[in-house]
View (cartoon, one colour):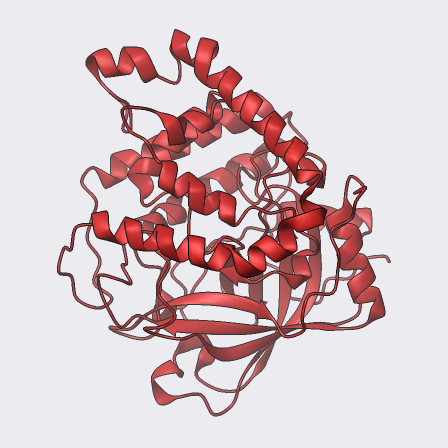
Length: 412
């Protein structure tokens, strides 16, 4: 039986392919999305104040409750632990997403399953800061230097609807180019990919649960993953909803890696990308279909925009786990430290050619120096998952993968 499926009587009640899904879970998911999208049309009235004053304590409470239920495996710092049946769960996840892609996108128009809607692929400069602490001078951060970068901002997926109907999350993929040295994947030679999302914690703790989620998503009943009475994930859904507001501008969002990476031997870190300027865009009362891209256009027409790229060093193996992506590492234990600056110069980026450029790019955290090797089961899954699904998408669209150099030019 494929990984992530219930068995016996339990399966007969909650199987994503079963009758109950079509009669109960899919209608409930549709109803939830309808009410949620209706509520989003009022968020411009209250959501900024909610996020400022109520989200932090509510998220802290949820994290504390989750940690009280977790088992301490007494692992060392930066120590990984294979998940039982990990390869089967990875295979099940890839298979579900591949089926979803073939079922929901026509050849020539296939999109990424996650980080789906491209808001823009922007030209950037990634500058490593001088004077870093010795323990942080590893790999990409070993010496002060500026690299060209292609930076893709996107919505969550798995569809690409009008922005107000998407799930209120943003993602960013930074492809640093001109990075010499051996890489963990052979399909690109001079890149280092850094991928982050706007929620402070991931939707599933591990690849086993991710396989379950993808089966419900493909069945068009994603709410069932959270409310399944035999295997509920209500706390995880609550934390995701806290970080799923109606966004105003993807350039004004703080992003998190959710999962850890090496920073030299025996040292684990997570990443965050934070705007250096305060938010200034208001949530529109009557948003256009692509209002998030429009907000980015206005920002970069007015001048450059900068982010701090930061790392957070693991100092506690239980409160800052390697294998559970739903646990946000406490900043009280280890604050983020800026190690680089991402600069987006004033630019135009909305030509059809530049938007289509996203399709030939593959972002994968395993496009990486060994000093930054991805850690944990979610990251281990991403190596094969991202590679296979990118190959499927590009084959459906009949485009060739290219390794960019930063010298690409597009009409304005």
